[in-house]
Image 1 (cartoon, rainbow, N blue to C red):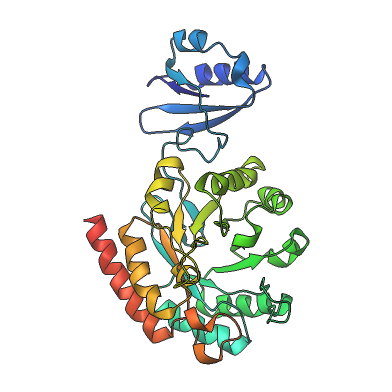
Image 2 (image 1 turned 180 degrees about the vertical axis):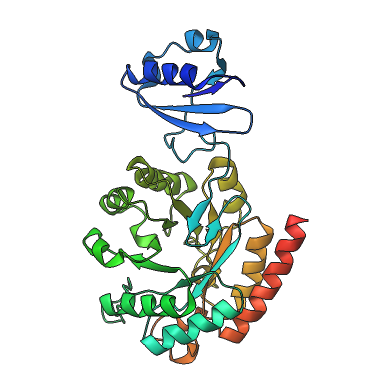
Length: 334
């Protein structure tokens, strides 16, 4: 249920209404807009008399919300959420590019890539230290050493770092990681999501391989219900019958999610297409669709990459992509 308060409602009046809701065992989420305050009432609201609520002098309107996700729902939070990451912001008109290799292979490699992508305009550095692979015989990442190399690259370049977590037990290793990524395979690892909800660290939540948008938002709800509202959604392609690409990039998810949620939405065309030559056009399309950012895989030697070399751009290709995407952004903003 949501209750929209009238302009001019005092803090005391608002707080008294909130106390009334809480006396009935309900939680209240407050969203302050430019002209109105929206109270999102969470819990079993069947006992609330909506006619009585609407009759109150301070209440402009009230209605029940049928969607099971509440905290992630735009109805509860009409304004776009802006997630701060170091000196940068994602969402609410702030567009950022996250770039780097699929996996950290050595200290020299990650530093070289970091310096290159920063020069081309990337704000955040990505790199996998723990790698979920389909085959148990494939490279699984450098683990703790990979995070150390990422932190060294951060020290040299000043770029905030993004890396994927596999298990809640690894959280202590991610203490200095700026954005914790939850991969597609872990989107419904609810115990991991609960653990991330107890942190205040930004979480980049990737859509599952065959997950609906509602399921993605329900996973975000798990994190937010724990108290962490710094969630960034990522469309990374879904599995369909089409074999020409690694996955099918669902760009319709961007405007649809924009209607459904206030959370920032970024797009990963690298994992979606699986082919380097398709990354640039799909990155441009994602920017045109209104995404809040991109995640692009960049490797200094894709031919010899230990992981996902076929979808990785060279630094030179990334530089061209970044310039074209920024031109698209100018058109969209104008």
